[in-house]
View 1: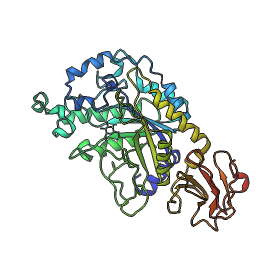
View 2: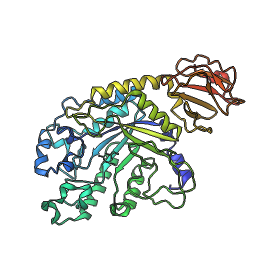
View 3: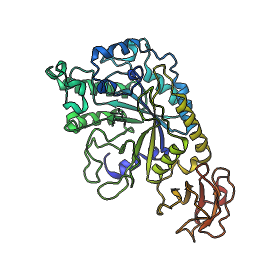
View 4: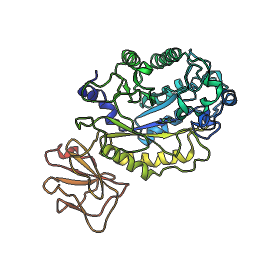
Length: 420
Ligand code: FHN
């Protein structure tokens, strides 16, 4: 199951859903200086231990998270089951460094799965290949582990095989203990730590035997090539904090499944000093841009130490949801249009139905270059109102970010199919 066609069919639902929620949460929400705080501030295991002993997210209610994601129009959600600090949000039998051993005393992953599954939202697990807590995870230079540069670790005897056994064992726990999982999101390979250094072929064979329909990201290493991709190359690319200018294609120029992961704030994990939250307009435009280039958007939220998604994030998700409720037809199941990008915005397309997302209204009418003989009718997606497209390549001033629109091309579904 590795050819381009197989990958394309395996990712059909993923490519239909287009919009997901990323959730970075863990002990680092207590220092509240981002998920890399241990490394950036060279905090030792002993100095980090008080956060473990204190962790008690008394307001953690994933049903509320799931409702917010559903209202926002997000069709799948990916939670950090273990980030680089090695802390496990799930009740792993392979470590004591887990949420069930903190004052939280709960399997936070299990509650996440149950709540989001109940809302019909797809389930994904983020799992860090890197582990700053495990004694057998070696130091590899200062770029990844500045904290490991101190003598306490440098001279320790690492049994990396033992770490790999632990890592593979935890992935097995996650894929056998929580029902059907839709996405396994590994993070991340670097320098020589890539591919078979993780015993990635063996790991992927196990994953696919346990969850045959699961999707795997590309961060185990390798490349999603047309010709003989590595077994661990993954099912989709995962550009981070960018929307790739030309989408993502393989060496033959064939489009590949991809998902841009982008933070709603400036940090992945909760950061008390992070007062910047992207606007709903920015999020919608990023989502439209991703879809117009055959990609997905995975939008990240960082819950706080009490277990709540910040109010500023919830407000943006709510506004995005109101746009998605009116204009989601121009996102779900859509991809790039077979037209060049117009100057006023972007197109998305599903079958013969074209969606014109007008972001920047110039002076005078909007021109639909190249569509002169193809427009059958135009409706404003937000309210179904007819757009006067008297001259097929021209439309009255209409929508802005709130609206979008679609132009029903000849040869498409019957009029009755037209959503109002
Ligand atoms: O180091 C991580 C980072 O903390 C975050 O999890 C992002 C999300 O994609 N991945 C790594 C940086 O690429």
